[in-house]
Image (cartoon, rainbow, N blue to C red):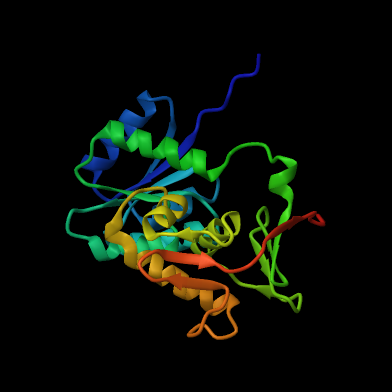
Length: 244
């Protein structure tokens, strides 16, 4: 019988008094854990270690957590949970806009941290790909490849898209012509119910509109529904993807 490899985590925090007990607790829960005391140490660790998820402190000397978070998500496509202090709401919003999957506020309950880790890993999709999931989305001449995370415009040009924009667009494509309120979008995109971050959704919608709308100030595809949220005003179909 083949044993399942343990989930690998990287804990990045300059405070050893927090980092070490967290790493010890997570190890007892069956995770394989490595530690880094700075962004520089994390980057060095990542040269020969690819974790399934990164726990990342925002406030660190030298390169801060938000800068490293952007690298982890855009360059490495790794799930990230931010470790934040009570008084850092703006940084949390920025982190979620960048594409962080979740956050926990210090001091936190270790069992809650484990629950959030497992929830993010489930959403990250470490599962085999079903045929339907391999298909591309097509809408109004646009195509989105969910496996390669590539957005292609009607002229067949590749459009750069961030992890956060990809998640938001996919949420709309999975629910075409449905009104999605901000709480539901947060739950689908960030995986938490936190109305304090309505502005994060609005900012992500604005950025996505600049990518796919002819005139982002007068959007036709992603429409604002007064008092309701947003709606993708387009038909969506799944088409077979051509793989290299």
